[in-house]
Length: 472
Image (cartoon, rainbow, N blue to C red):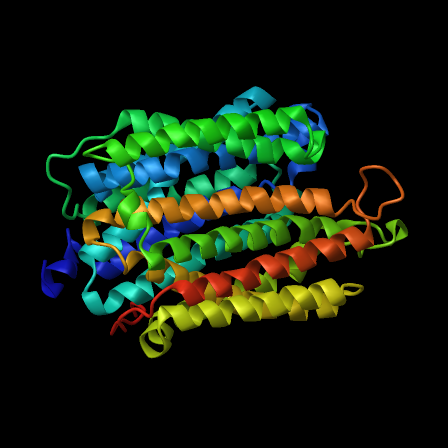
């Protein structure tokens, strides 16, 4: 496909395609996090327990983790446009169901359906690589990757104002109105299918075992903070996950049509980028879930600022703002410095910001200042890591590899949230309650995880420099 052809997608241009991609991706990222600050309101709305309502968040993570790598391969085989549009429709159905759910069971089903739309992200990366002019790819991929994290942070910030002014159900209605039918129709018109694998089929045995071991592992991680890391339930699930993963590896290595080509995953750049994504998931999700809770805690507990949901969101908004601004310059920075250097620099900057929060968190101003540092670092790193992985593989593998990369980030988020939930209780005088020492240790853990991603990046070979810029 020539650059001229790439610029004409249906009746529009690649810029219009990109507008649809970023709108849809931002909505999905928003739906990952917007429920976190309003879980107490949802608990009252659905008449459930504090433990039960956490499944509103956990069910989405589990579903998305299982479905995203599978959907990436589906897009490579049957067309990324079809996968993208189907994912949008599924996301809309799940979001509409969540908006009207009148029981915890119905809400969990809705969130599971939302997670089935995981093909949206790898399909978006594939469409960019297939249809955009070559000089625009790095910038578009970098910006979209940063926007995913920005959307996650925006959900934390916007949840409070939406819930207090319109009601808790509108945390679902607003994303649905934003992307719904109009985005699906626009995607159908302006985002043509790129090349597909010839004669390929879905390896359903591999898909089944991949989904099964991921589900067992993430269930173990999500259960650990409530039942204890040494609980037999946790380790039984981990043991089953290991056995299922071994069978999955055996199937994939012996298959002529593997779901995920493990030879590709062994490329140093790919596995280093995936490791970095996992560590970013640990750091970002742990921080975004812990910071609002910390800020909303009453000072009488020995920590916290007694902030409202809205105020706590505004205090950490600099993280999202920094990521968005750096995402705008992703293409130019990748062209000038290379994805590997940006990944290392961004990881170290973000780690320094988290260490600053761990050291000084007694008032709003230093938290906001250090959050800005975190946002700058994450903006550089997230933009770089997606380009690093995607550029290292053949175009036909873009969906599968980017799907695995997104999946690994989500899995890292589940690990990070579970670790933070356990660490914040360290030093508490009341069993199971958070403490100032616990939060400090938790933020140090986050800083260490993000810093380790810089170590992972040093393993990745320097990639060829791309003459790409962010689409104007």
